[in-house]
Image (tube, rainbow, N blue to C red):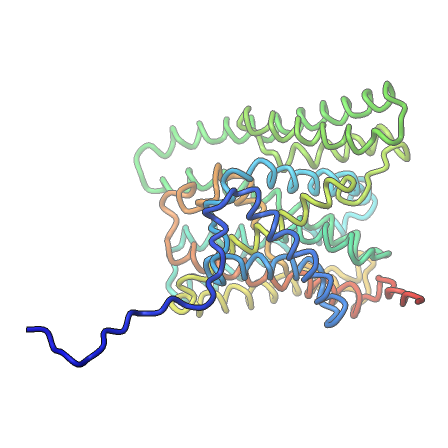
Length: 421
């Protein structure tokens, strides 16, 4: 029999719940987060001198399932073409700022670009293997970890506006080690078959595929750069330049993806070709104009939403080893050839710090969606998680590393002038 005299108290609903934005219209939800991100990033920059890019990523992190759960990674699937466009715009602009002739005039600089990536990869691979990581997975993680994010570097350069060779070397090294990381990911299917009887046939197939990717991407980049030059001559309107550049970026990235080529290499070559053909006529505005600036805000919010810290407790020794070995390897690579390449010790330290934001661009451009693990079969899950956690940490703190290296140590950035009321 039910007890009498005891009132039945119904559970009360909480007085406030966060809106479930991912069940609303995805455009509305993400637009609301973008509005919050712009305001919050400006406030954090004004109050705590936090770089705005870090503010955007923090808002994305708070809106992710790890924070308030306002957005889910699946909500970004429909936005991936736009996010890819934001990445492509920054990569094209990076290519337009590179000076390949500099590597010929200063061969020690070319050697330094290779050495810093190689020593970082060796240090990270050795550290992971020493902690028990599988050899092949450690090798691939080391190759990816050796790259510096050109997206974070290029966007931070817009914000800091450095004037000096440390900033120029940073962009050159970002481009080169990102291309090497991209090739490493293309190499993974071959490495994962090591020890199997079909390796010889697969190796021949991979070599042919790699040559097709490299040569095809290079030729497509040359063609796209030439097309931009011709289109600009026919248009002869300065106001139409950002429109032409965005159209070219979309064309180059789409063609490269559909043809199985590398969008990264294609866009870098297209930017360098356009600069060589157009010279001072190529005026690449930061973020390729106002529309590109909005895309960049969306990109960094998405990075915050995609940051993955799950399982960090289990792989934290690998994460610490990866970050520490990477810092040591890059620092040693820069320092060994600093003097022969014309770099002072303070500048070398600033460049080492600026190179710390780890690049996930290679993974983003190779993967067909945001589920990275599905694109790298055979990659050890623990090493993958350590790589993602370390990458998230280094990207989230990336603007701080760049601010420290370029502004505080190298002294290449002008301080912001106070506003007069």
